[in-house]
Picture 1 (cartoon, rainbow, N blue to C red):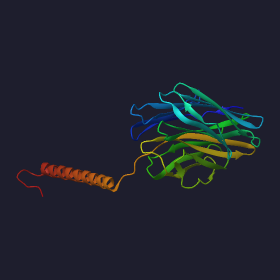
Picture 2 (cartoon, rainbow, N blue to C red; picture 1 turned 120 degrees about the horizontal axis):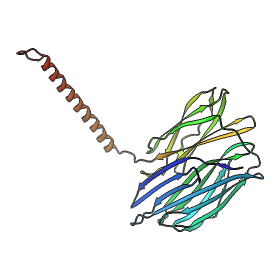
Picture 3 (cartoon, one colour; picture 1 turned 90 degrees about the horizontal axis):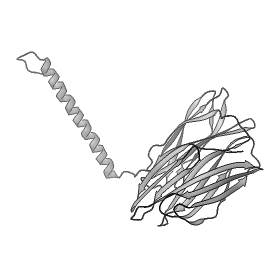
Picture 4 (tube, rainbow, N blue to C red; picture 1 turned 120 degrees about the vertical axis):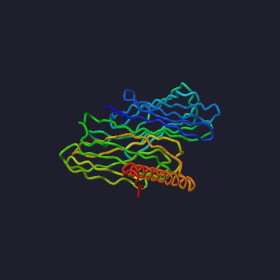
Length: 299
């Protein structure tokens, strides 16, 4: 059995007491997740972690071979990985230091004796820190195939994540691609520091129906200027067959506007409306003057 690759792109940066930049991507061919975070050194170095997960289910066990390479120019500290699968979690040993150009390999395994044919989602979280001990986390969500399931008949058409300050929505559209009604469960996978206000309720889809689903996000500790990889997964059962679809997105964290900034924005809007009104008045008077007979005065 082999693992499916989530196709995603993510890049980002944030500034705090020096320069720190972050980003990641998942490449279709190698399933490489790149996390780039610049340290808070004055030299503004970077930590670039490339995560290559290779999942498979064999003899009732899900095993993920994970390779983590630091492609940056600063070492990553306290690098550790965790595998989450069906309400079970296992953590690797912590690598104290991952120097630039070095690769750390870990094997993570969890029981999978109670799963049948289909696609099953799994999550990998990698925690690490920069030279100042500031924590970061990389999140990857993919699916592993058991035997040879057919293509899923439900699709996530799109995921929309407006910039988030303190709270805000995450919207997605889920479409049924078959004439059979079905019930799907939806999960939103977020890095630590970003939470769901409440779980997303199961969705009933009629034949060929497309529905919009909204989740409420709460920012607990995300830094303004950061961009995080987030994932939406949809699961359903079709008889004895289990299907899962995973779609990635990018969430940008922005600073909350102060009262002064909100008032200043409102003043700019009012000023713009006044300028438009003045321009419209001048244009109207000129048009009336051009239409007035010679020697007469416009009303």
